[in-house]
Length: 479
Image (tube, rainbow, N blue to C red):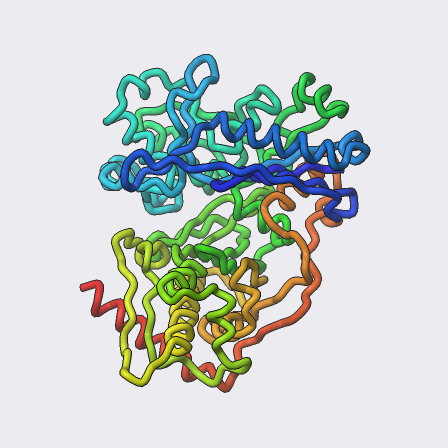
């Protein structure tokens, strides 16, 4: 048996799988986010520990015999969170999370102080860890002076599990302190934030052993000596859960935000188009991500102002889409990352006419999100990545109409996996199995495909024209 722990923003998920990769049991514990000032987003790191204790205790209660057979643990989690520890390994302040925007000024400062784009492979954005530490240095110097270690959220949980300070390559790449090509800390980038290698955790691959479960916890859960894998950042772990560890494979996630993920065999940044270039959670492998900030959230917004749920809105569309909506929608309700790197971008409807009804607006929203994914696909291709198909995951992937629109807009064939759990906790459990000696070829398999949604040739030209209008609308409104 193998345990996967996913430390998310809203909760912790514990998932137990067997040697065949089948889910045996799962448990969940909620987390809350504190927002003491506008644009801030923080959590108490010890709440992650309490949530993990609760979820694992519940799992042990549900599946006592399975838990006694535990042979490996893997970790995944929200990326970029700055967890600052003193010499006693206690948090010096609440962790600053990935969706905290306070360090916008510091981003500009770091862009001038170090080659974060060339070595780190990414634009300095407020979501990353490095600018958060620059903010602490400027605004909380007494805390900055006491920092002995900086850990990411899942790695603080690892400290509790094993007693060691360790991270994996995929999560560490999201700090902006990693030399992503060399898969090692960059002294130059650390110096740009007045930090040193001694304040960083050790590094392992996500599939490697990072430590052994502490004896007190092993006794608590009735298990023997259990290795803890390096694990991965949430998207890399999700890719491992779907077996997407070879170049040319990827997924399109239609969640609250949207991600187009592609596995690569080399470090291939494209910072001009705000592509994220990170290490993967398996050795000698990297990945790229195009990220949009309001995917399903755009539909949620429309539902909130019309009193409808997302499924009620998508049900208004015909089963077969005949062409794009006449209403052009820019889905930048929370700003945008790929390809614009525009945190202050705003959403818009264009081309509205008196005769339009709510279904036209729903169709426009689905088109707009699909065009944002088309921007991501273009940015990845411009970085030299060949991707022709992608697994479609997330709540929005339940809409057949949305998948057909997205296929037409992006040129990707979208693969619907058979029902199952392929999320970050599942990927973490798989990495735990690898750390315990499982064969990667047997463990990191892709799910069976339930359906393929190829770009409809009868829609391609019309969606190409609508995409050009979408790009022109952004060009006009952003100037």
